[in-house]
Image (cartoon, rainbow, N blue to C red; front, side, top):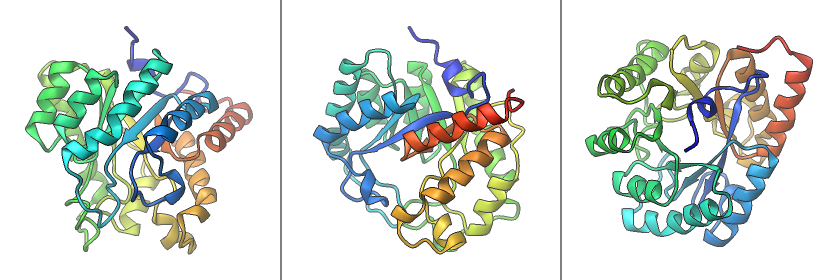
Length: 277
């Protein structure tokens, strides 16, 4: 069995690990990322070959204002992809992007290695599943729900509130026996945060003992920051955040554009060899 711990922390040469986004949905915010069950497998294999450590498979869009998807439909979308990728690459690392324990359980049974829960294990059954399976888990912070999370989000101190909340959940898992090295935390850029909240989270280095994942790829932060209305225009801004993330010690980057990120991080590791834990 693969020891997943090393794959939740950055590489020995200082590069962030890459998690390729595989959206098996018709309504993800970045149209170019949408795939169906047939094209998803080819794209997932290409992402691994291009430098992704993880493939993150999701069957429900959680963009602002998104409508919920029934669990059975979510399963219908993701299950053939998980099964096919696991069959094609028995050693490949697969994450399931879901808020629903029933979907996560089926994905784990089909060969997924990690649960990436944007709701931060709000459902007690999801926490029980993580503890029962011993899988890797990414706990993300989201204020509200996808349908209302961008309606006037409020914090007194966004950095401390986000990381205190995430750490509390992680500590609860560890207290119940889950391995500390199989937990990573995601501050949830764009999930119930204004531009100033997002920038505060990106400016401040987390001192958490847990691994950190950032998901900033092509998000609306670049619409507000750079005036890039379309997600297709936001690669440059995304890559700038990736360079910053490497210097800040972030462990995993969840990205649409694996090849471009791999090139960026490899070049930075060559030019800045001192950027190593």
